Length: 150
Image (cartoon, rainbow, N blue to C red; front, side, top):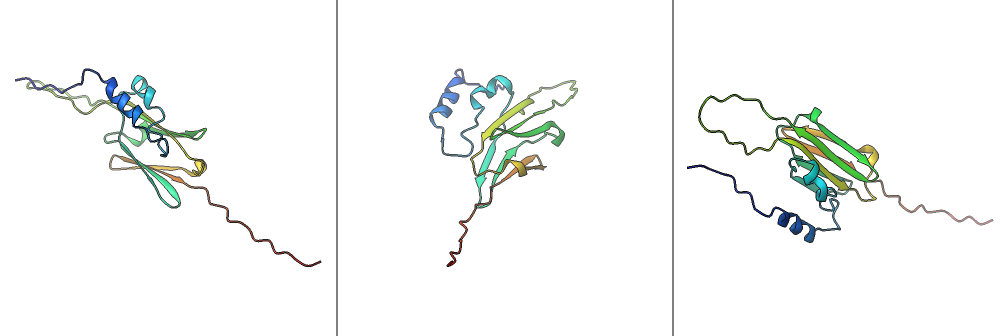
């Protein structure tokens, strides 16, 4: 009996579903590059985005990706996470092989809101999880100006 991974015949239906369900009010804008990612990336890592009082926190699952193979850039209000997971070189003399873990390049882009401070972004990996911290600009409180009698 052969075991085969199910691949839907019309992969474009998933993309159509994502286009119809976009939440334009979110930080992500549902992966700004999502419409062209399939052409330039082999896989898409799962990403969670959380807004806190003083920052945005983006967490991406990148198991098996070395920190040197990850590029995080910010340009014109767009945060880009890209890189690649290298294929393992193994030799097997008998039996069956099955590869479900995708190898190759990945790319995700996120439109940042105006409140994001792009100058102080910090990215670090821990146990295969990339955590990108995007601080918010400090809100300027109105300044009270005393009126003196002349």
